[in-house]
Image (cartoon, helix red, strand yellow):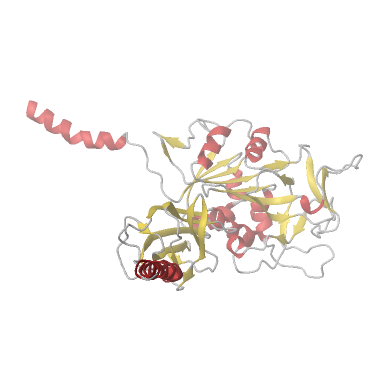
Length: 434
């Protein structure tokens, strides 16, 4: 009986350990927090585009008491989507601080709001470097760039085509149709230089209460109004903030659009293409770089030395790749530089490339000894930053490594020997001739 008990016990231990072990997050797991499950249906085209690219979406109400971003010190999700603009308090262990810690740990975030945006959502946006209009009832109005419809309305339905000019963020294929937007505008915090306007309002736009007369100048006007913005943090986490939840909806995806003053009517708005390409960037399917195989050695040698000597000629190389969404492809650019650094850069060289991801250069070690660093600091709009550093000492010549006779010192050698010869002649004359 005792043998049977021990057999059953030791058989069940591995199962019990697994059942209580922390769930390992996948690289493609996304938590979606909603105000109402109806959003899951009304925005299904957007969600389906993520699912088709391999993302595992987990939908919860924002006030669900069971939601959590991490368990046993491990994050359960790779990204977070907040489609809950009216939430006043998240459920479970999620709050504004937890969401900001989630981003600080290198994870991605999408926030979409509307005119009912709560103070909690506004606080999260402000901490990310985006300031929504202080008036909670304000909307972006444009009497010149509105979308033409059967009922003219109040011109809060905007057709915007002022996109950021960046292929890495919005893709290389041009967005032909304007994007439909209806919501609140925001400005960028001047202290946050990592925030970029992706979709801007036209110069004629302004922010005000709906169907109200202006009694004072609006707080946000013209092209300074950002409709959609992104942030790439120092840790390469990416954030998308939109002033309109409706622009992600099936209705806006499928709707035709004609911008006021334009004779062209498009059968389909640019919302689907715009948001699909933008989310590829936000979720690191594009513009994500990695560096590997950093090497340096003397010219003519293959092994990395423990130190260099002044005036040595060395070679430096590194391989850089870009994630295409499915595989790592060679990254090709002509602006990658390496510094040979000690307190300040003594050498700054632009790396050559073979078009296959390999970057290389050669240079002479400066005539200064000390502890140097090879540094590559690569920051380019839309791409994750690269920061590479390798330390190496540089020593002077040893006493037996100097040249015996330096050509530049021949005049001094000649002066010394001529002085000795003259002294010998003078001494001989002085001693043996009167």
